[in-house]
Every structure is written in structure tokens, then in C-alpha cells.
Length: 548
Image 1 (cartoon, rainbow, N blue to C red):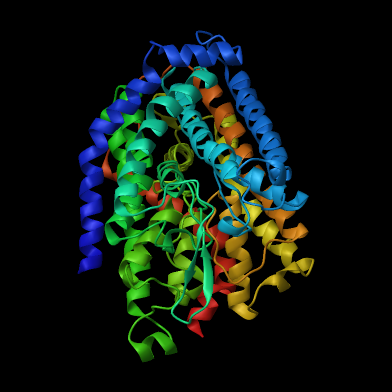
Image 2: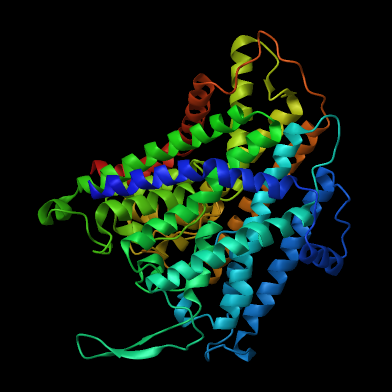
């Protein structure tokens, strides 16, 4: 009952903020007035804030900014031992620096290292935490550009990337993160520049506990749906997630922006009911997944959980089974990747659900921005399928879905499954699957989870597998890089194609895309596409383990 009340209050809170916060986001991305600080940023970067960009220029701006960010962060990590506040830690080796730089710039935050024993405070604050802000802003900006493509009438302009990036960082992500960090500090999270302290454990041994700017990094990590964490055990650490109510607040921050973006979608189109339809699809998929995850874990299938009465292995007693499973569901339905329990210790079917959540494309509600544009891609595919069924040229929001549009949408959807399945196959073909602690179906699940997390830019780890090797760091880095930027380029190309079209008037044969029928169709198409793509792999991994 406590677990279901936890979920119910979270749902009610998100419903309460949907309109006011969504309207605020809409004003941020649609306003024409630039604040003084923003004008200073534009002058520093050397961009004309009033110059609209076509999809090609917008895409090149995204790629250029991200490339420079990867290079800067890579160099930062390679010279860490020479920096202030390094805490005496060594510089990262080349393969780990590459993996980490790509990970944080792509909003994945996959960590192949233990944060408290690898990263100094300056790198954490000026390197990793900065990317927590701007990589999240990039995702929102791309989603907004796609919505502008649907709303535009015969123009190639999708807005200005530099304006979107600056506004979203300074007006949305930064202020909310500051407020959340203060609340987290009041709850007991650490926020200092200490190198840590030695404490005596119950066994009499001395253990070093690292301090640091934990509260501020945790705030932007959750708000920007970034994975990773200051500590190796992530949100299971009492310094990073002290109580059940901070656990609740973290999930609220994770879901705040992704679930509010459909309101922005509706406002920009001038049709709020379209936003409600997209939000309904997100909610339907999310609640279904959350219910299954909690049910599988509280059911405690397996010899040991049945013997002891609960599947508590790998879970914190202060959270319990239900709240741990809810956290796992939310952080894999989004691109957060934060964990407060070890997914490798879940029951076979309970551990399958986080994988399925990521395989859905993280669209329920998904990462900040990435969830919205991912779901709109699926909506375009749904409209195309519906058009084929009735022999009519598909239309969505007044725009025709022709050969170019459906090719771009289909390629965008297929990028991630290709990366995940190819990467998993290569790991086994090259023998690198042997770094997993287990063999058989569970060993396959550990490898499959790693590439699913990287390819979908989630960042969570199944555990039970060693990935800090040159092969794994390189392979997962490529998976994160391609899984982030190939869909972004395709989405922006689709936005440009839609923007150039003049709207088509509605007729009696136009599919209503704001009604429950369409909501069910999009959810159904999403589940069917994912099942057709990943069911064979799941059958060899968690499903085989569960049936055994």
C-alpha cells in the first residue's frame, strides 16, 4: 500500500504542474525578449540571436557544440591530476576519458568508474555537472525545433539553436536546480569541497567517506534526466538520497520536464488537445510499465525471495521493494539512468522491465526533449500505418507524411535497435562477453542491458559486468555517440521537411489525432514495433531465465 501511495502522490503532483510549468516552458521557447545575461552570452559566442536557422544550420550547430564539448571534457579528464581540487586522483586513461566525455555530452552519464574514487571536485563541477545542464538543454531544443516544424507554414526556419540552448539553461534548468539543491541539503545531502573523512565501521575497520558538491550535482542530474552519480552506488547512497521523501522528490524532478513538454507541443500548435493526447500516450505506457515492474518485484519469484519472503537483495531497507522498483521503472522510462538498487539483483522478469523500458525508446515520457521527439516519430509512423490501412495519403497535424517523411521517421526509429543488437552480437563474437560475472541467460542479459543503456542514452547499469576495458569503453562510447546524434540529425531533417509544407485542410477522411483511438494506436504501434525488434533477444535472456 505504501508503494502504491508513493506512485499515486507522484502522479497527482505531475498532473498539478502540467499546465503551469508547461506554460512557463512555452513562454521560454516562444518569447522574443532576450535578457541581459543572454545577450552577453550571444556576444561572447558571436551569434546573431535574431537570425533563424534552417534544419541544416540548426543540426550543424548542435553537432559543432557537442563536438567541442566532447573535446574539452576529454582533455579536462586527461589532465585531472594537474588541476586544483583533484583530491590527488590520477588522470583518466585515454579509453575511459573518451567514454566519459561522450557519455556526459550525450546526456547518458554512463559511468565505467567509481565517482568518489576517480573524479576530483573540479572535474565533477566544471566538467561533468556543466554537461548535465547543457546536454539536457540540447535535447529540449531539438524537440522544440521539431514542434516548430509541425507548426511552420512554408518556411525552413526552425528557430535558433544558440538562443534555445541559452534560454533553456538559464531560465529553466539552472534556477530549478538551485532550488532543488537547497531542499536536498536540508534533507541531509552533502554540499562542500571536502576531501572526505575517515570513519570507523561496526567491524572496527577504517573507511574513507568522500564529501563534495553532491546536492547540486544531484539536483541537475535528476532535473536533466541524466544518469550517473557522485557515488558509485548512486542514489542508494545516504549522502545522495537520504530518505524516502528525497526518493520521491528525485522522481518528481526526473519526470517534471518530460511530462510537461506535451503542453508546450499543444501550445505551439495552438491545439492543446494534441498535447493532451501525447501526454496520455506517455502516461499509458509509463503506468503500465510501472505496474508490471512493481508487481514482478513484489511478487518475489525465485527460490531465494520465496524463502525469505521478499526480493530484497540489492535494495536499501529504507526504500523497500516497491519504492525501489518504482525508481527503476521511472529512471529507465526516462533517460536518467540513476539507480537506488542494483538491477542485476532483481528477479528475472523484474530485471527485464528496465530493459524493456529503454527498448521502448524511452518515450514514456523519455528524456528531456528526447522523449517528446521520439514519441512524435512514433506518432508519424502510426499515422502512416493508419493511412495504408484505408488507402489514404497520411496526414499528421495538417502535414502530409510522404516518402521522405516516413523514411526519415523510420530510420530514426531503427537507429537504436541496430546499435543495441549489433553491439551485443559483437561483444559475444569477440569474446568480450566474458567480462560478465554470469554465463547463460543472465550473462546475456548483462551484456544486452549494457548496450541497451548506452544506445538509448540512459546510463544505468545492470551491474555484474566489468566494462572499464579498452574494448568496452570504445564500443559503448560509439553506441552512445551514434545513438544520440544520428536520431537528432534525422529528427531535424524531418522538421525541415515538415516546415516547408503548407498545411493541408482537414476533411472527413482525416484521422483525428486527439482522440482516445489515436492514443491507443500510438501506444499499440510502439509496443508492437519494440516486440518485433527485441523479443528474440529477450527470449534468450530474461525470459529464458524466468521460465527456468
